[in-house]
Image 1: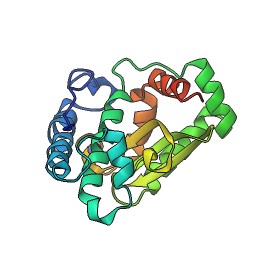
Image 2: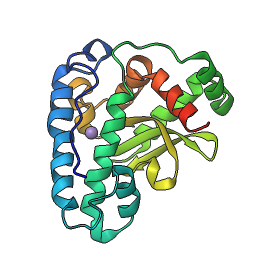
Image 3: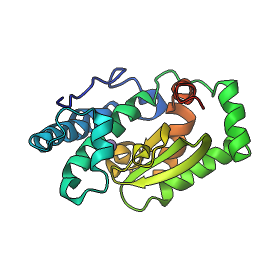
Image 4: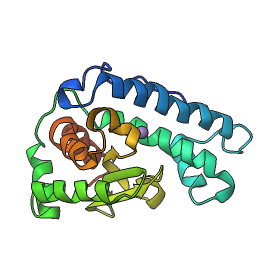
Length: 201
Ligand code: MN3
């Protein structure tokens, strides 16, 4: 099954009030994400994995040096599919049940946010920082390049793209400010709660 670029779940200018500009989404979705889809499709051809789901392809190619290009593009396609859904133009505070769960796991919501920002800032070069469910436990993690929680059997609850293309137009070199803003103004906490519930967490 070929990869296809999904439409954004909101207009390109819908996140501008939350700090992510129309220009960023035009570059990030229409060009960067599209390139992962197009390159992934070229590499999928003849790989023997054509009939597999995107998730199966990511897991099957992780750590396989002979399929590194397919892994990079397929995993980045999956990551961006999640990332668009993990943001919302109508930001709301965490649902109370999720808030309690996060506070139980990290000490407080602020401590969780500190750990999430630190993970993203501590990812040297390109990559992602995540809130994951790992064997029933909430954890903050970071991954390089296109690597994602699927590779470790974890459920991605929230992920922030810390590649420079994700923030340079709006925040220039200020990655910590971008990630804090993502948590405070863009994160779709209802989506996080849905993911947690769907994972039985
Ligand atoms: Mn990106």
